[in-house]
Image (cartoon, rainbow, N blue to C red):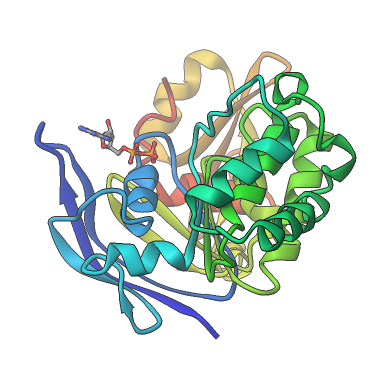
Length: 294
Ligand code: ADP
C-alpha cells in the first residue's frame, strides 16, 4: 500500500509570499481532501507534489522515492489534473489520449490502443470517443483530464479544483469516478468547496496562509465542535456589536437578514440557539475568520 509522506515543506516566492509554511502530512490510499480558501497555498502544494515546482526546504516521499530529488522517477508514479486542463478543441478524446500516451512513452501501438480504449471506458466517454472536444461539456472535459492522469498506472493522483464550473449532475458523475479510483490509489483533491470534501473524503486537511490548520477525518473535526456552535438571526446594523462579544465563525444572508454562527464553550443565551455543526462550521472556525463581516 502506498504512502505519501510530506515533511516540513516550505516555499517563499520571490515576491516574499510564503505559500507553504512547514507543511507536514501523511497520506494513505483513499480520497484525501485538501480544503482551503483561495490563496491558501493549495496549488503551490499540488505543484510541488507533482514535482512541477521546487520547494525551499522539506521532503516529500512516495513510498521509497524522494519526490523532490528524483522528479523523473516520481512523475512515473503520478497522475496530475491541473486547475486548468487545456484541451486542443479540434481533436477527439480518442486522438488526445493517444497523443498524450505517446508523450508519456507508451510506444507500442497495440498496447496504446488497448490503453486508450480502457481509459475511455473507465471515464465513461467511450461512446463519445470520436466527437470533437469542442463540443464537450465542462464535466466531460474533466473526465478526459482524469483519463490522461491515469496513463501510466499512477499510485498517486492529484486533482486541483476539479469541480469548479460543473453542474450538479456532472459534479456527481465526477465524484463517483474519483471515489472509484480511490479504492486503489491515493487521490488528493484540492478544493475550496466544502461539499467536495464532505461527500468524498475519508481524510482531510484544512489549509490557510501556507499552514495546515487541521489534519484528520471530517467526522472527528465535526465532533470536536459539537455543543460549541450556536446561531442567531441578527440585524445588519448589529453585526459589528456581535463581533465584539462573540467569536463569529460565519455570516450568511437568510432572506436578506444575517444569520450568524458563533463558537462558544457554553450556551451564550441572548436568543442564540444550539445547532448541529457541519463541515462548513469546521472550515470557518479553523481559517482566519476576521473577514467574516465584510
Ligand atoms: P490556492 O491554490 O490555495 O489558491 P496558491 O498556491 O495558488 O493558493 O497561492 C498561495 C499564495 O502564493 C497566494 O498568495 C498567491 O498569490 C501566491 N502565489 C502563487 N503562485 C505564485 C507565484 N508564481 N509567484 C508569486 N506568488 C505566487
